[in-house]
Image (cartoon, rainbow, N blue to C red):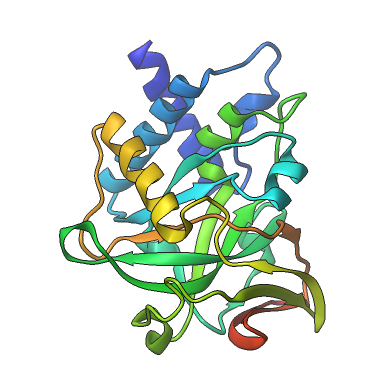
Length: 249
């Protein structure tokens, strides 16, 4: 089975780079269980690191009411983030660099010394929003790295802030000026620590761990929204703009 996982990981990485992720899930009779799906994700990570990429952290996904309703299933699940796919506030995204680009507004953590939370701030998570299996399932979501295709981070001043660690606030996504959703910051019980505790336990079960400086996406209370050429996306925290991106025409 290990050789099958490795071969599948090679195909998955090739598909991801060709912007046609997860084609194996369209194959007749193909399927993975959750354990196998994580083995594929981790084998993909090893391939990408061997080719020069660097792990930037992890995501916790499929946790809030918006995405669980959209997907028809509940996590949490873990994905892996890569340094080359972290983009700055205000970036103009090329739509052809993605497969059915969709975005989430959510909160992230920066891990400090001894695994403590050093900062909390809003981000825009980028996704290749495609499922190919006859029915959506967690294994496809996991083997496709939680659909992650990158992260937009805010200005450095935001990335040094822990103001909203415990302070209640609202998170909003606006596309072309229209409010698509507004809700509280944290999707899991226990707030930021709840997402972090789950992730640490999960990583330990897979012989992985967080490092100082890692970025952790905590999931979102909002939904996942497809975007199109010409769209302008802004994430607001307590009705103040925190970061934005746009999609090239």
